[in-house]
Image 1 (cartoon, rainbow, N blue to C red):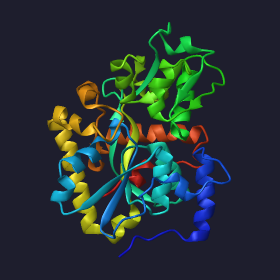
Image 2: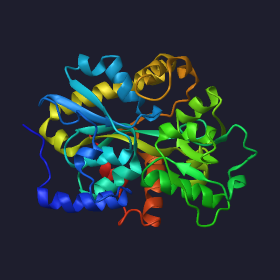
Image 3: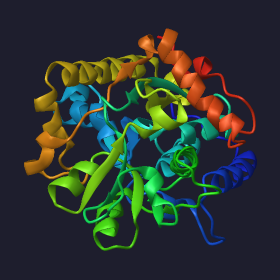
Image 4: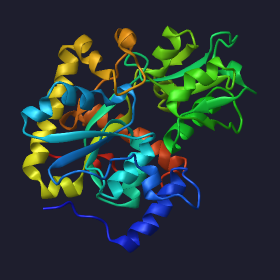
Length: 340
């Protein structure tokens, strides 16, 4: 049975709304220009999972490289995208069957508003100042000792509404009034700092590690979302998640269970053998093999543990998007989580 796809007329309206919300503009923009080459060419049994090339996607990389999906009898293909919002659009159109950890939960939330029931979250990746993923970087020669020292400077962030919103909140909490930020692909963050094109950047790992090890930048502060957005430096920020399309879950229940079991095996592998797991970052992100041991890792929480305090912190993060009117209506995180 093929995956169900949205009815074309309603899809066009929802897609325009999504593009507006996610900051994608241009009258000549087409779906083909948003998705990577080869994202469509696949047989019926291939499970296509979108990922953004950051460390947060590690469970997918591990499951692919360690053969966990193959051992489960699944033909899984990782499809690289240049931004989380492109991943979400791929899910909306049914061109991919789900997404890896590291996909911005803010973008997923917008997808859920655009198309209710679109997906179910199977895993999320909390981070804070100890489980490092989010960070603020400056050039090596910067005199800034805190984020507040960057007032009046050129500040950048990754592409998409989640990155922009988070960057602005961080700056506001550090004394900026009506801050503006420049959207740049994460791969350009460290080089742009080194070239003097920007004076600071809100970014995600492995950017900080690459910048530090290649003497391109230095880390000003880590765990900035937990501290400035959630108001607690130790709080888990559930900024990324892995999810499967509901249409896939409903039409292929056995493959769904096998996929989730393999994915959980990867999460357990990362917890038990973090050093070996790190090796799987190479080839999926900008990190090189000689730097892989320097990369900090976020945490990974499967759907069954997204309850209690974890669920409350996740919900608080989504409530920020509602308060900022990024979400047109409140979203109940619990309703988005897979129930095995």
